Length: 367
Image 1: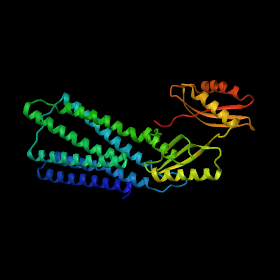
Image 2: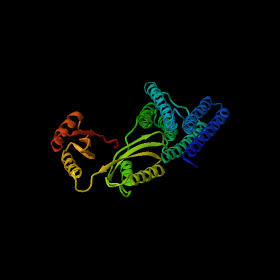
Image 3: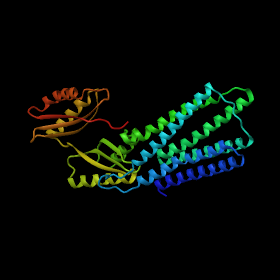
Image 4: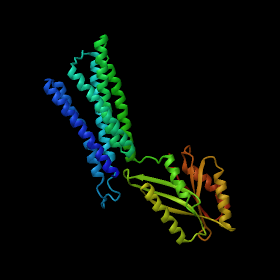
């Protein structure tokens, strides 16, 4: 079973559990002539909506790529998660409004044995369902499932808080319904905002985690002939599709045929291990005793000595074209790239009179 099938299967479990719970509540409500319980059963049917959204989003994300969407439709999953997060947020705000009303106008709850049984069953089912769906979402890296599971857990917590406040009211005559409800509502709103942040960040383009970046750099560095990995960039087009690029250092004595073979091996491994469609660029490292190697050493050492520069790479020099270029990654504290480029260019220029010097500013796209 692949990832998408597991997400759909988990969502169907959520739908079935909510429908069965709704059926149980409706039957009890009709037998007990309780409109409140019947209405709560209808609410359980609406809770299944988040699972339906997850299924629809997952199905749509599986559509094959077309001319207008060459990287597929994987990002639809993020929209599904956003919709569910909005549902959680709206539930949180609605609960907060109702809870604040109860603080200023408390009402004494009335519970029968029947309603208490229904409430306890609902809490247990929702807790089990929420934990299961959320855990599967974390395993499958599905924001929609995580949001759906959290939604079920919040339902259980709200119901439990209502039950606790009712018990306190019956035993000690103190109404905590509104206060507990308001506190839990704030927690739900905070969680809803966090749920919303994850898929929104994916759509905006979040940075690569430092651990993942180090893992890729190590894997690529382990290839024979690679003497440095730079400029790693990744774009998410859904959980299963990533587009990326990086540069590697190779010695200038390496043939085009060998470079072709090396880059082909790297791209194949990146796709097989991580699902990344990777483009590999090449920087030639000067070797031997010649003018290019001498200049490379002087320029690299000179720039690396600057405390404002994190990394120096991509040295290129052509005596024939009278052109020298070098890439730098400035520290995050540097805000005026143009001033830094001007300063470094003036520093390098005396080493190569009558030669055009280009200092290229790169940036770190990882955490």
